[in-house]
Image (cartoon, rainbow, N blue to C red; front, side, top):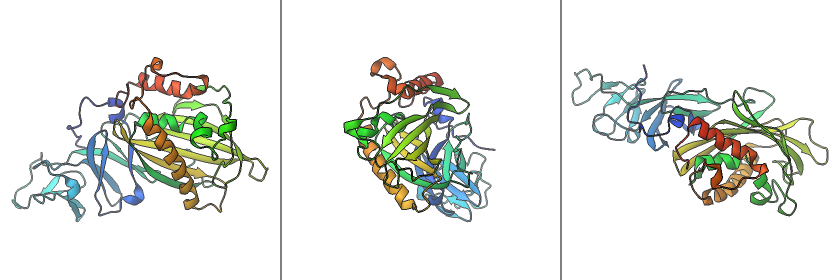
Length: 340
């Protein structure tokens, strides 16, 4: 039985409390390591034992010390203050100052839910209302998978997602890479649809002079999805301008934002690509590092820091249709953390 962390602030956003959030890459959490993370203003530890991943509040119930300062011993977390041992269910099994005493039932860690999927560690502070969002190409053997980031933004998570699903900034923020400032694309009218996964656009076409990691001009068609308030995805169909590419070259990306605070976020990227076998992981990550650093500077500059859900607070154009529908959706869901 999972002991739910009753210390989570009841005034926090129930939508995000009861959602899944990435806090680490699987490869960053070997057995025997305690990793300290922060979600929605709450400090946690994550650790693994055999095939199980755990996420607990970073707190020993005895005297309130941080378990992140402790260590793993025989598959148990040891508190650094008085040496209390906690097993993978969160129960205290040993109090060294009273070794012959059976620890009381209250001597437990505050346990949250944790899962491992897409080579990421996901946690939820509450009772998840949805499954972890789909990464459609993850099990497709025709696609190679990579991870990029994490990227640390002193910015609102919803502003970060909105930036990710906005193609009209390409010629200016990513000039010479994803667009040409002097010849910016006109964004054709498109529709935003709602389905079982959230929001989805029609295909949106743009020209990109350095359109992918092959450093060649392409026409690129993006289909964007907003799966959850802080998880989005695109499927990018690239057509090489000189005709040398494949018939169905696809570059797909999932981005999910860890809401550290209302104005502090960690951005995690997963990439799936079905072309360019000569491209290395370094080729993929180098380009993403460049693009997301350009985005970070802009997103951190936005005011107000909290995203306004009242559509009258900012000026919206036809090309912003997905952003408008995204904000309406957040409001309908009842999201409050990081919103204005």
